[in-house]
Structures are given as structure tokens and as C-alpha cells.
Length: 242
Ligand SMILES: N[C@@H](CCC(=O)N[C@@H](CS)C(=O)NCC(=O)O)C(=O)O
Image (cartoon, rainbow, N blue to C red; front, side, top):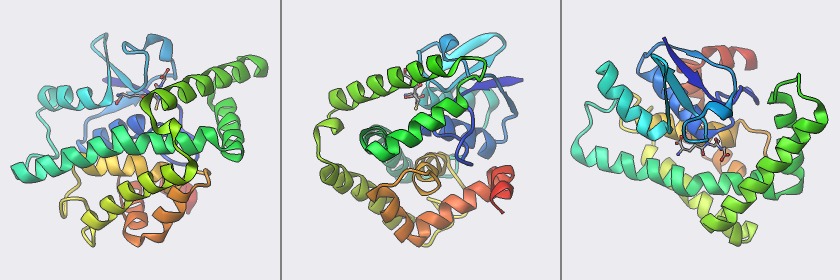
């Protein structure tokens, strides 16, 4: 069976890493059976999670993996979409992955209070056989790495107000397009719903205070979409909160 390697669960959401949450949600929407492997980034073929092991082959990158899995398993939750809907979905997914993701990283790692939440979270998910001092060193390494990436990507050069402006514009676009539909393109969830859920669960249900969270909570359709996907595809997490 396909083995999925990702960050361990935390915060009562599928994953604190949006790419990991996206891939696992997509696997569940596509009804592809899988089992979870241990958190071991040292085996990641691209040095990042998520990655999968299938017949002893390791493959990384959530976005590329979806294409591979579609061909391999003959599944495609986007099959019913028109070419125009395909284009719109792709544009929203890229927006969330390449732009919005960095606003999430910004508020997690650049705000002193949220930074403490991230430290505590990582201390909790890193293997407990490692001494706390070593786990703390790993967290500091991750923080340094992410702050460098933020600076190089460009989001890290903005003020918190500017990042909020950009991130909220992304969320408003998702909310306006979703409108009162249950899923992004109607009655059936697609790849874009997996990506939207991965981003929104990391805003709405994360213990990270930010203007992004305030805005997302103010849009009832974003809150309802997150809950809808969680209840349908991650009932075990929904049950924990009940
Ligand atoms: N394009 C990749 C991005 C994956 C990614 O950025 N993963 C992060 C966690 S959110 C990671 O593993 N970071 C480790 C590192 O950069 O060293 C995908 O879609 O899978």
C-alpha cells in the first residue's frame, strides 16, 4: 500500500504543513488507500514533505504527485470540470501555494507570540526520544531556514500590515468565488477544494493569531467549507472537537 510521509498531526487539523494537508485530503477525496509513515524528512527525495513510498520508490512534491497518482490509479476528482473551470482552479491553487502560503509563514514565524506557539508545537511533534535541547536546536534551524526563505521569496520584506493586505485579498477572492456553493465548483469536491481546505484549516483552526484568521472567521462560507471537508474526509478529527 502507498505510504505517505508527512509532518505528524497537531492542532486537531490534518496537517500544519499546507502541502501535506493538501495531499492527504486529495487522497481521501480520490479514495486512494494509504498508510502513514513516520516523520522522516531525511528520506525525502526533494528534502521536503510530503513524499510517498510506493513499491519502494520515493517520490516528492504534492503537486507533481497528484498528477502521477491520477495516471497511476485512474482517478481524477476534476474530471467533470470544463476547460475554463480547470483554468480557474489552477489559478486559485497557485495563488494559495505560491502567495498565500508565505503570508501564513510570515505570521507564524515573525510574530513573537506565534513564534512561541510554533516552538511548542515542534517540540511536541519532533520524536520524543530526542533530548529537548536537540529538538530546540532543530526548531531554531527550521525558523532560520523559513525566515531566509521568506526574505528571498519577498514576503519577508513587507510590514505586517502589508502582508495582511495581500493575504486577506487572497482569502476574499476564495470566499467570493465559493459564494454559497458547498464546494468550489459545485456539489462535488475537486483538487481545488483540497488546496483551499489545506490553507483554510491552517488559518481557521490554527492557534495562530493573525489578521488572516480574523478575516477568515468573518466569512461564514470559508468557515463552513472548512467544517464541511473536515466532517466528510477527516471525521476522526471532527469527532475529537465534538
Ligand atoms: N512544493 C512542495 C512544497 C513542500 C514544502 O514546502 N514542505 C515544507 C513543509 S510545509 C518542508 O518540508 N520544508 C522543509 C525544508 O524546507 O527544509 C510540495 O508541494 O510538496
